[in-house]
Image: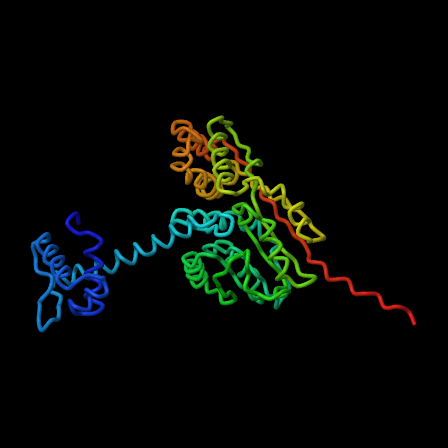
Length: 369
């Protein structure tokens, strides 16, 4: 592969698209002679003929066909990576992406499955309701709430098309037909005022530098009398045994990195004042504690290892590179977090589920005649 460069792959694809040397040269903004030279160079590097030349047409040889198929896959993958990177470096206050890597997508799904009963036993809305899920990501929570409310219609939005595609595939696998996925920005929703009966937001506000702006926009598209449900975690609620200074340092590294990116890993405790400041009323906060010990073997693996510790482990390279924590401390901290899932260990984390209501506008009192 060292003999092949990206420019060669693009050259192959251009020839496949248009068929002739002259047209391919135009497509690549090259002269026909320059393109011919590159082709010859590539054939010399590979020591094989890639094309038959016939009447100014280029026809792929068997070797050329092999390279053509490989070029498609590689260029498509590079295009996907390019889009993902551009999405990640966009202003974090507006463009947070759920499930920005394969590992993170898997972690989000593991998290949703391991604590679905704790979070969603009361995620039930009236039959026939139109529910907006804001920031659905890869659909980790979508499949739970949609399955619990088969008569409701859900519109699930996210800023990232790649995440929406994964979410659609997941819901198709679970034969869920009551969801429409749509690309949208939570700060500028493409819906009219008072469009939805209910709104659901899970693990999104913690990533936004301006959560109030998002909540105000959600308030706009909610019907008077409609409700909003917000679920967030709070890293300050983490307790475990055996205790470990290094494990606490790794968690703090995630909190600090989160803050540097404009997020807030302690937002769970702030949901009441946040919703109140955005004109929601009737606000209730329900702490949802996930406590794990040897009597709950199913959560030792799924929550401690595959959810919480996987999340912390995922920021290792970035937190070390930024000098937030040293490598030795981080690695020991991860080992100590895993230790809590072994015999005699315990682990506790609290999520906060908030519900609020959009108050109907007061009607003017008519004067008595």
